[in-house]
Image (cartoon, rainbow, N blue to C red; front, side, top):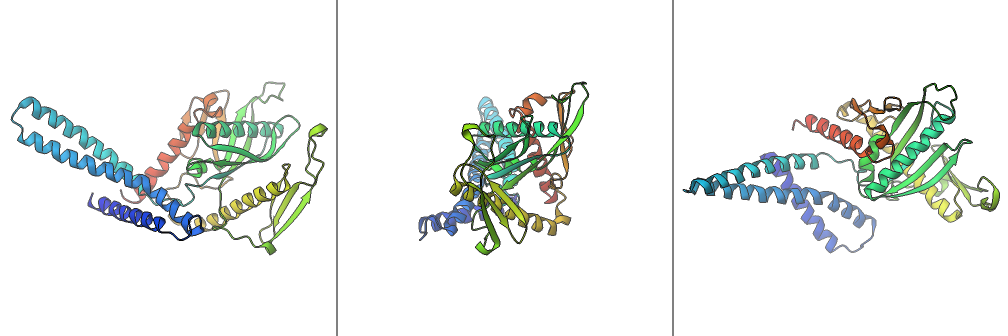
Length: 358
């Protein structure tokens, strides 16, 4: 307990220090100011729990003193009951604070770039990729996040060839980071006339959005090409050279955006490129710490098969934590995806707490 309280007091002191720095900051809105604001907001939940914990401890001491000095049996019993309730509250708050004090992924509070690509399975894989897109869109709406398609191309049967989307909101990456990997579906495809069950797959990548202060992209390291955006034709066909393709020469990463505004396409393509380079840097840092990553849920490798959606049995199984839920329709609809995400987050927290010997 004393170790926990000591850590919390350090956080509270830093929180107060940042508050003073922000109040007197010479450049509100600058890079340093933004960094301090993020650190302050990340610490605020810990400080709130600390204050709740301190109040509960004081209330417990008061209840215990009242019970010890009370002659009336009924009043003493009431004070003892209150003390038991407060003890339970203190234990729950203590556990919350332990979780909040776990080393935090600096990207957790960021917005995210979602990328989905069909894998094995032909047209059916493209249809499944479309189902996953709808699932994440609905889940985002339920969280109050803003979901925006950046780039999307469809196949001939209404499925997807690939899609990228931007998701803005509170702690988006923290919630969605465990979704990266291969998602597998087992079902009778709409294109199957014989009623046979097929297995198809789609790959999901969730990238934390990077800011310019995180990743510097030099002008000489990129080539920007403009071209005519492809479309289905008809009155909505794009007849101007508005599509933008950015090639990052040192890594060979290529990002394409083909909305109507060339200026916006360039901005969004740079946003996606920055996110991919940031993720690449994170992957390299993670590889260096690989031997110490026993507590991570899954490997984080996008080629890892993480989840199976079995339609005949109506179940979804996450292979990393041996979780099976028989509510496939609600999960794919996005309404119950939160149950899977919460289970993954809880497993990750429990593993990291165990590693720290808490």
